[in-house]
Amino acid sequence: MTLLRPEFPFTAVAGQADFKKALILAAIDPSIGGVLVSGPRGVAKSTLARGLADILPPLPNLPALDSLTSAFVTLPLGASEEMLIGTLSLQKVLEEQQVAFSPGLLAKANGGVLYVDEVNLLNDGLVDQLLDVCASGVNCVERDGISHEHETRFILLGTMNPDEGELRPQLEDRFGLSVILDNDYSIEDRIDIVERRLLFDEDPQGYAASWSAEQATLRECIASARNRLDTVQFSRDHRRTIAERACAAGVDGIRADIVWAKAAIAHAAYSGRSSVLLDDIDAVEDLVLSHRRQIQPPTSPPEKNDGSPPEGESGDKPDSTDGHESGRSGSNRSNTNGDNADNSPQPSGSGDWGAMNPQRMAASAPRFLETLTEAAPATKRQNTTSALQQVWSRQAGRNTKGTSKTVADTSEALKVSWPATIVANNGRMPLQSLVRKPIEKGAQTLNLILLDTSASTLGKSVLSHAKGIVLGLLEQAYLARERVQILAFGNQQVSQVLAECRSPKQFQDTLNDVAAGGGTPLREALLQTRHHLERAERSRPGQLLKTWLVTDGRTNQSVKDIQLPGNVIVVDTESTAVKRGRGVEIAQALGADYLAI
Image 1 (tube, rainbow, N blue to C red):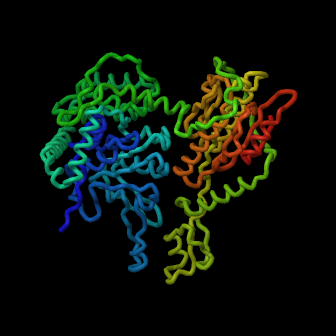
Image 2 (tube, rainbow, N blue to C red; image 1 turned 135 degrees about the vertical axis):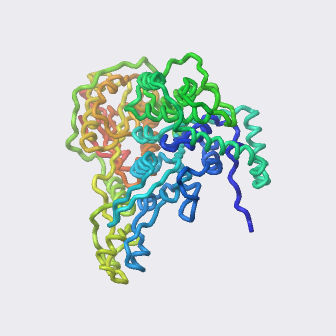
Image 3 (cartoon, rainbow, N blue to C red; image 1 turned 45 degrees about the horizontal axis):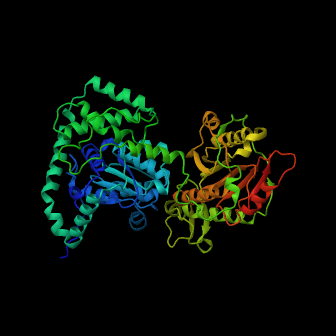
């Protein structure tokens, strides 16, 4: 019999001490709420994730793994809600006329690891459900005429590459712990990693066996820590320390405090202590706050003893994670030299005004856009909308009502609601009609707003009026529960003013701080916009895409070769007595609607 190839041993992975620590803490207490790992390709994210399953001791009061469960379950990006939570068993209905539950991946992951690669590209609704079940340990299913609930305790592990897009803050906060990785390896580290990998590839079984003692020791340490959890004491003074530090970090809500307390208790239990010490609180601080911190700590904080990983953990922890935190914050604020930068020579438009000290201008009252005047044929835009509707038909989510079609008239691309189809046919076979899932009401809409902040907008309060337009768009999006993202372009750079999120209720103070100056890097702004929109299409197929380009058109850069997905609206803010008409030309080049203010 051919033995299955083993996974690379968890304890054999060189470095990544913070990642290992987070995984071990989540293994000790799965109620911490999962681990989110962000980092570039090739930094052992998947290797450690898969290796975790081998060091997990069985959860208490949980039967041994059977044919329905697995120690390691991968959730694919294209997974449906039915695949995740379970649904009506069609086989039972058709063959035995019985209503029965067919378990999903959540049931299969019970007692093991549920791994989501590229979690930032997963449907938000599925991520919400994952996090709910991970925190509660119970999967409740009320759908398709069935009511069912079952226990499912697993370690949720989500990995993501920030180059492919951020996870929205509301979901990010619900992950208990977060680790930010980089690929800054020393020469010796790189040599060590390659040597270990080559040895494993040469003889996977033998290499795994050579690390079996370390694996067994770590497994026993995790099991002992689990048994010790309920006995660990946590003083009120230490709880106060957590509360004070959480307030100083500006975190939203109380979730950070709860997770921090659980992680500190797990760390103390793993270290063999009967009570939480300040060292335990320090050791897990970055794991709890790295994705929640809104107020950055001083650049040179006092030294503290949180550099050592939990006892029994292999690898060396980096001296500090401050660089990771500041890097993450920066990624949410700006992207001036992203991987979509256009390095080809351009006309002097980007340097029309040269570099200059930026100046601020407060926003006017919100201005609302009611009517659009066509500046170019809408052929491209109509085709795009049609394509989106086709995607919706294929990707529509769960609905209670459907549209019935005869079998002969139904395209293979239509997504069929099988439970509703069975009811509609009264159990008759072959089926006479199918019931498909219609387009879900309230489909997601992303409004990507491009704000011109070049020096030419400082005259005649152009920038103030433009900011008022942005406030109006934000208010409209807020009332419609739509998503927004804002990029500003000026002074030869493109910066992110607001990362993609649900439209905020108040944003005027932040918008007032946006300064203007220098030239108009319109081309670079559009290239980055295209990158953001393409990424949004991949992460949420079927959503409507709208790009609002708010500019006075004062640039000589050509944009004829740039096409943006979705609908594009050019809002021309030029206010001179003699207009140059560049706004109309830009709209025509982009195949966009045109609106002059």
